[in-house]
Length: 96
Image 1 (cartoon, rainbow, N blue to C red):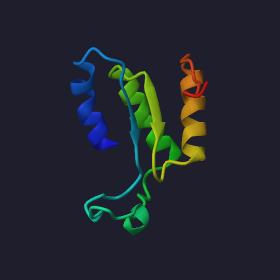
Image 2: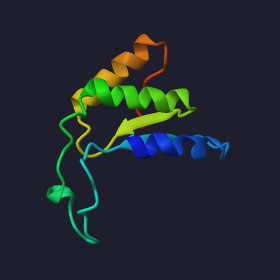
Image 3: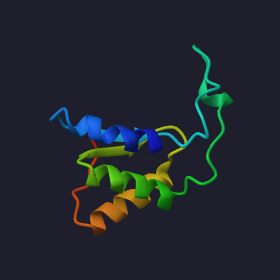
Image 4: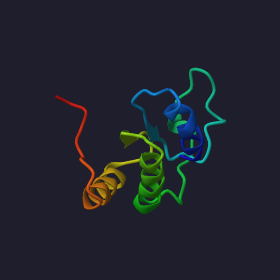
């Protein structure tokens, strides 16, 4: 999530709709070309509350689409959705 936070100003500068979907791995350095994420470790500090804090930063920086990837599970997304709804944001999926 930290890398996505740093990228938000660059994304905002495009003038296009943007967002972020971070993973919860400790590092992706060990991921060899053609490898699988099974070799990667999960961050113990990436609680639903922590992840929601990152996503709320992205929204404050202009993101309109937020979600999660590997190691960001249903509990993270449910907590994030609740926090966003409580703050008055519209929450919905991308599906039709």
